[in-house]
Image (cartoon, rainbow, N blue to C red; front, side, top):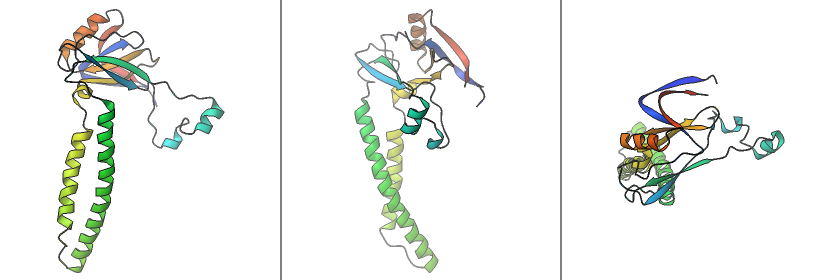
Amino acid sequence: MSPRKEFFKEPIVRVNATNIRFPKMCPVCGSSVTKTIRVSTIPGRKQWLRPYWNPMFSARTRRRTGISLPQAQTFIVPVCEAHHYGDESEWRYRLVCFIIDGILLSTLFIALVNMGSNFWLGRVNPFWVYPVLGVFIIAMVLSYLVFKPNQFESTFRIVGFDADLQHVWLKLKNHEYRDVLLNENPMSSEIVSWIVRQ
């Protein structure tokens, strides 16, 4: 894939990933910090159309070719008590929601087949079909609420890394936090309005 330019309406911050110093203020509200959040990402990870096209998909192929999995980059971001989110509880909710949605999806399929059959034969639908449709719609709304980004994820986002993986691009909604971050890292950070993706 050839390199392409990506432009941003709001400028983003380009900062050295190895010695970044985060401000002692919350990126969401700007208040004083008491906790930290671990933000992890894998630099240079490519998206493949099919997983088995990825040469690192199979452990046997990785051993034979000598390719190793890319190391995850972790940043420790200070946050306030109100915007501290535990990974375990969120992922537990998402897993439970995923399982329940799978069960409800199979129930919905049975209900739709039953409705189609009754429509074709000119019969009235049984009473249980409509509650199944209602419960499925409610479950989809709750799933949207569970899987949507929390306040921290929507305020502090890692856009990616540059070609040599030395600098990270951060999209920060809080302009005051962005200015303080630039002041904390004067020699290794800058504001950019476009990047080149590999």
